Amino acid sequence: MNEIKYLELHGDRVAYQDVGSGDEVVLLIHGMAGSSETWRGVIPQLSKKYRVVAPDLLGHGQSAKPRSDYSLGAFAVGLRDFLDELGIVRATVIGQSLGGGVAMQFAYQHPDYCQRLVLISSGGLGPDVGWTLRLLSAPGAEFLLPVIAPQQVVTVGNKLRSWFSARGFQSPRGAETWSAYSSLADARARQALLRTLRSVVDYRGQSVSALNRLHLTSDLPTMVIWGDQDRIIPIEHGRAVADARPGCRLEVLPGVGHFPHVERPAKVVDLIADFIDTTRPSTQAVVTPTAEQPHGSISSVSDGRRDRLDL
Image (cartoon, rainbow, N blue to C red):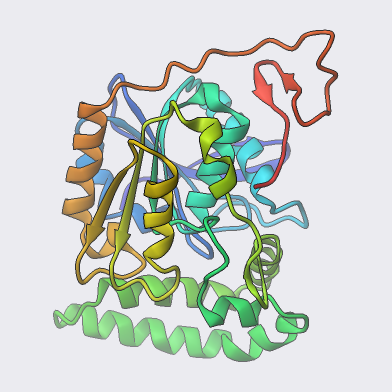
């Protein structure tokens, strides 16, 4: 595991990995109830060629879990300020699941930071989503979660997981699911999860979609990676992106579920490297606000950045 680093951003601790060097920067954004650890299978290889930065989003992993705004727009603003702290001007932005929705929001709000966009089993592209997330978004879930994921069960489960791993029994997809489940044993993590989840999901499914705004980033090289066995967000969402965005590259991985970067890390690394090598980065210029564009309106910008507007 790579070293976890920390910085303070607006009074909150942000945990992150920062590995490798090079002219190209790759920003990795994890999914719901995840952390930068989800990228453990791809960071070592990507960092041989690029500088790879992978934060724990606020409310996740080892980052702070305040009573705060966990909307896509808030995450996007936080990532912008995070990159500023690290002195990173532009990056290829890669997001998985919730991280894909955050990545699209980031590209919309702050296009001058984005060279390319890679969506892996991304949220924010249609209403379909697994029933587990729909149920967890319902009122009263905060009282159910401590019963579903008590610390005692998580402790025993971690011991069993270690026992099976030591004997060569491993399931990358199962390990990722368990990691998300075990994080719910922490009360602050549960509250952050529910705030995040309810900002994008309700009982009818996902409540946000970027499909009608993809044309706003039409000059941004985009690749979509999806597993054809994804039971959480269907592959049809990935195909919808390819249909809506001429020139979008769609890569379907057979036999893979919701976590391609965990289930087929070498393949995902190859796809990302080839995508970066064969595309020219977006040349989106930094826009300066004018007197006719008052700060705070949807069309306004601030220091070259679009104001928040959730997808």
